[in-house]
Amino acid sequence: QVQLQQSGAEVGRPGASVKVSCKASGYSFTGYYMHWVRQAPGQGLEWMGIMNPRGGSATFAQKFEGRVTFTRDTSTSTVYMEISNLKSEDTAVYYCAREGATGWLRPAYYYDFWGQGTLVVASS
Amino acid sequence: QSVLTQPASVSGSPGQSITVSCTGTSSDIGGYNFVSWYQQHPGKAPKLIMFDVSTRPSGVSDRFSGSKSGKTASLTISGLQAEDEADYYCASYTSTSALRVFGGGTKVTVL
Image (cartoon, rainbow over all chains, first blue to last red; front, side, top):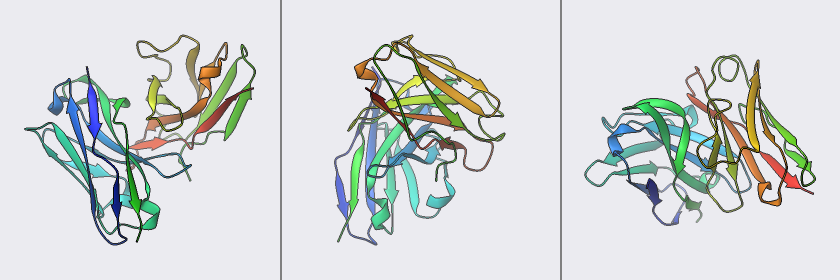
């Protein structure tokens, strides 16, 4: 069965970097786009960006351009999200979410599986 | 401020039907049938309950239904049950550089 297993909670000082992992299993890793979505405490869902796990290319929401990077390791079917220059407003639960597909790397425009979420706290 | 507009809260009594709206623009909901809905219980990850406006994933109760008119999509929950109390989010593809957008979420309360 499809599973997305995320790494544990992180605490980072303002200005530092934090890296969250998302290990995929139960499907062909390179056949589905992966997204990152975050949710600040008591707030709604915020789309951060999308990654092509085959080639490694990524597109980000404008507010995250230059401060967030997505990488992947195809040998372990793991994607990573790193956010740098941490700010207090980055305190949130970060989710990886698989985009459904109508064919190999053909996006279906919905998220059919989600990781359990990783709490990132920006605090000095 | 979210790109898609949802009411902050909707409530209903057990057995009743409620509808959650989600309003966007011609660049997202009005231009494409790629609207999806997610249910989120406290402390849990979101769960897909509707995609392509009105298609239910396998295993989702048929008490949930979706529709769209112009720039507004709607999620209807019929025969409201206590377990339906949760936050609901709409999402859509967008032709703008944002690529994907969410609504601000609607808290559904079962009275």
